[in-house]
Image (cartoon, rainbow, N blue to C red; front, side, top):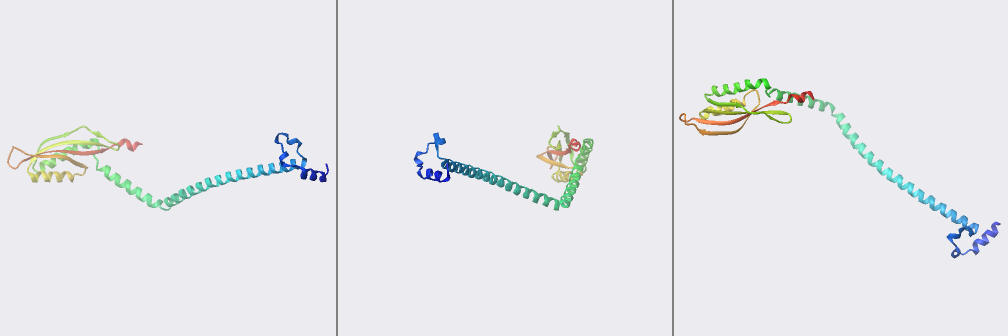
Length: 206
């Protein structure tokens, strides 16, 4: 069919005569136009779908970029202050070592009990009781409770408490009770719980 005949058939064609179930009977020009329109629609839809995917990927990349920038800034700050961190770590290790040195080892506990007894006697107290109670285990240390009972004057008891605070090993005092002692005038009976602490040496092996 010549081009003139195709154009004439296209002019005489009525869109109302289009039958999608019988598209094979459409004039060639209408078929070409329909194919071009369908192809354009497919290309346009595919282009938009592809662009949408690219935008979604771009958004994810931008989020990753922001996260990487923050991570870089944090690492750069740490790197710039590395020497200061090392100095702080060394200072903390030194302080920790000094504190651990104040905690008695298992073999030093009897000597600590002797020191407590000597402090009481030097301050004129009568030591009634000094008992090492059951150990209490905690995460990084072991608590060693000591039950103390002593009798003496108010000032002697005060000096004894001050003497315990000056021991080279860490000793804390808890739950004290003072009652009048019938043994003599101006005598007080003191019950007090002392606690010292021992470092859990197994953490050094981890």
